[in-house]
Image (cartoon, rainbow, N blue to C red):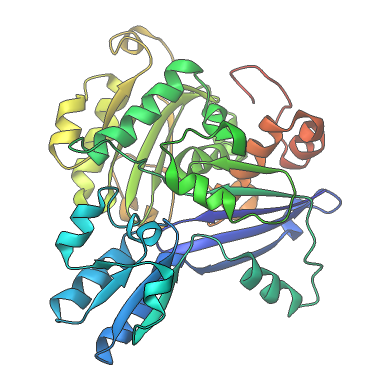
Length: 376
């Protein structure tokens, strides 16, 4: 079975072509600029040329392209966008208009003298072209897709809280990292970016979606050093988001999410230690521009447990910030490759949601095919 796994981040999009007929170490992979970085570059070139931009496509990741658009507007250059593309920058389109963006339809845009910039989180055609250039068969049997989705928060409600509400609700419903996996028909309506990402899959093959944070954690659990521990603290330091899971196998004991760029190393260390101790408060994380903290059990319960401290493993493109840290983290490299840890997690998610393929995939990943909460 061949599965194309695509983990869409802020800095890169990490692409893995899994084939159960070959060893996992031989799986083909691409580490390419993220779609938002590509869009940001196109906006900046328009700014430098003094040209207007017309943003089309669909809701996608913001970050770099949001910053590039703000710089473009500050430079006095016009910007236009369809309603669908404008939702990339704010779910409340009135806020996008207040930025200085003019909302137009595709028909209205035909008369514009503007640089067209298409927003999309996945470009399967581009991936097929890249693979075909190396004589790789571009047919695959399934897609596993991941991104971080804040969700479409109601007007006046914090995007950060709304995102964290989603994480908490998933864990409350079923306490397992794999519970964050969704088939297309299962995706909540408010996960607009995830739904748009899945809609890019025009191939007719089975698809699964998994948030990038749990994907990284599921990937890290495939590192033998991490897997053999009784309990683990898995910290994914992405280019924009830091997400820590205190887990026992795939069961979640607690978690916190913050913004990587808002945290000093000492704060990362402090928050991580206090999450494990059960003394980190939700209000403290949210008040420092983070998302929040959630305990799946009473915070004091773990302090009474006997045994070794959890293994602290770190992954993500900003993991080097913790080199020499007092946390003494283990740098997880599942199947020998940290950069596609999320893709390995996506494959596990696909096995979770499509049980007819579970044994074939989990055997290749080296994880136990089970429906139990602890999957190792």
